[in-house]
Image (cartoon, rainbow, N blue to C red; front, side, top):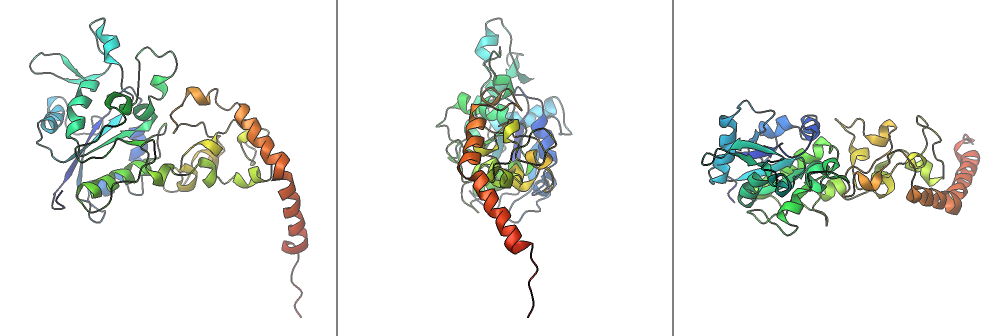
Length: 330
């Protein structure tokens, strides 16, 4: 596609089953920021026009008109973003209702469900991004015993679905995700749409590798304590939080490496155990939170019994014999 495109629309749908937490997280992005995208401050990236039901100046039919134009092919190219999980509308239809909708069908006067909008717009989108664990895997609305049949976007469209330009659904999970992970993903997608860069590198679950290619523990400032088999006994302890229910060793996330906002904060950086919010099984597979499970015990025992305490003794010996001694100048 031509790189002479003057602007690219990002149509954000916040009418899935969610809490708007992902929207709030993205407004805190700094590298790049939302303002960087809107003002075209990134080399090669034209101005991004963000159409967001919460942040837009327009309202009512003036807002819905953007989505109608996209459906008719008048906003080509555009990036489609879903926030919140997708409800199973066949369940609500049994009683003549619906779970989630926005705008009205001009022919019938009935609400247009979020599910229907997705089916109309997804095949015409240059790229499709599911932001947050609700939109990617179903998240909290999709937890056990939910009445809506909530699911992720990939469940609605299918794992083999491709956008108009051949991109698979891009998943940016988290509850909410770190804001920079989303804005950077948008920038990479736009460069690909313009023909100025490769397609974003994704893992087997459709997640950007730059953000979800390593575990939370690989960037954790407390990993050194785990290496020596030192585990916290209570909240506020500076040691490894595995003993308090942290899932960092098996959860894919980069928040410990890049911080939460402008390099500051992020889960274990601030003393909070990782609860697995970027993973497909969240929240059921990681509940109850802050409670050590069998997996935690096995990992901690392995670290402690096999090499943790041994490494600690070697290190303490090296400190006494080398690090704590001043050199004698001749």
